[in-house]
Length: 221
Image 1: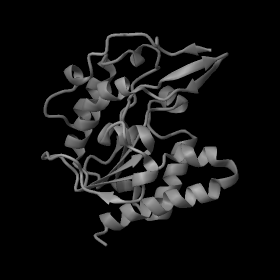
Image 2: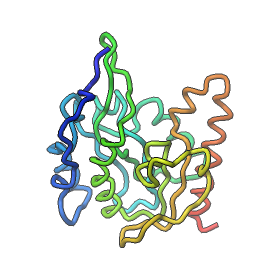
Image 3: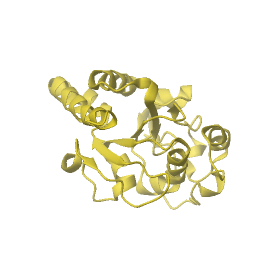
Image 4: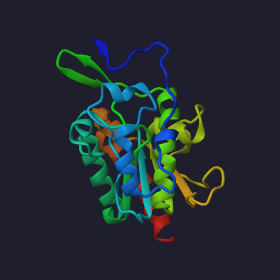
């Protein structure tokens, strides 16, 4: 098994120097491929930008691109993305009002033969990449944010975040800024539904229930 990048100390200057001032989604999309904020760019096919409406009401934030996303250059186009799309629809969220993205913009993986196996990004990768997410928030300015899974949650709340302790509950956005959403909600990553196997329906129903809380908040209920 081979890692996509070395695990020893490497230079990670962070993405800030590549993030344009006064970000718009167009400017971010143009700038992202040049990012060298951490070493993950070297093995990944490409950086994967978020997608959706520039004035979306809801931003959905996952972990990182998967294998298919890395190859195609679009977020949430793999199996987990299919689960997310169906769950948002079942929760009553209008897909035209959603912007989807990931905390980390490059795919981290190990290789096993010809297969590329997902490997969760480390805290150092999240820290290096967070300026891109902050810029997307400034460009889109959504009313609310849904965090999918532990990596997205830790990017906002820190290393002590646990999905099970916060899922399905509307929280105020920590900190203050002009681009801060009104609220944030955490839930499981849709990939957890795929891993559930015998309990897959229950896992899916739980995801939909959490997203329905977000849908109600967007509707002012």
